[in-house]
Image (tube, rainbow, N blue to C red):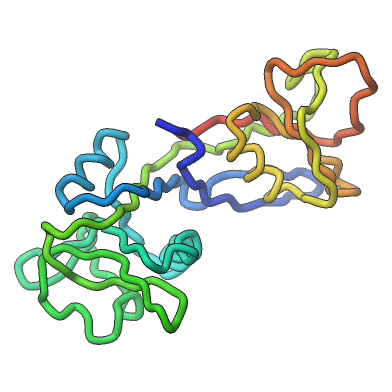
Length: 223
C-alpha cells in the first residue's frame, strides 16, 4: 500500500509556546482512483483494516468534499446504505439533510455515493444501485497523534543529520503535511519565529552547519 495515498486531517493545538500536530478525530482517509461496485469497495477498505467513509458531521463531510473537489467527473462510494426504509451510515446514524443532493434520496438504489454537482463545484450524497462502479473512500481510526513532539534535537536526529528539503514561511500545519506526503520524511523541524520548515530522513547526513530549529516532530505514519 502506498502510504502517501492516505490523507490525514491535521489540526494544531497550542499551549503557551508548545505546539504539536495530531489527527482531528484521529482519522485517516484513503481516496481510491479505482472504480468498483459497492461490495468490492467495502472489501477493498477491509483489506486495509479500514471501512467505507462515514461522515457524521458537516465539518468532516466538508473536509472530504474539499479533498475531491478537483475530481468533479468522479463519484465515490461511501459507507451509507439503505436499512429497511432509511439510509444510515455504517455507524447506525442518519446523514445530515444538507449532505444530500436536492431531491435525494430518490430510492434508485440501496447504496450511496458522493455525486459531483457540476454547477456548484462540490459533491453531495445520492443513492444508486450497488452494482454500479465508482471510486470509493475509506477511513480508519488512528490512536494517538501522528507526530511526537521532540524538544531536544539529540533525541530526534544524529549529530550530523541534515535536511533534504526546506521551505520558507510554511508553519506547522503545512510542514506536517509536506512531511507526511513525502515518503522519505521521518522528522520535520520548525523555526517558530520565521515559520521555516525542514524535512529530514533517516539516511540524509552532511557536514555543513545545521539550520536553527526550535522544535522537531517525529512522524508516525498511519498506513
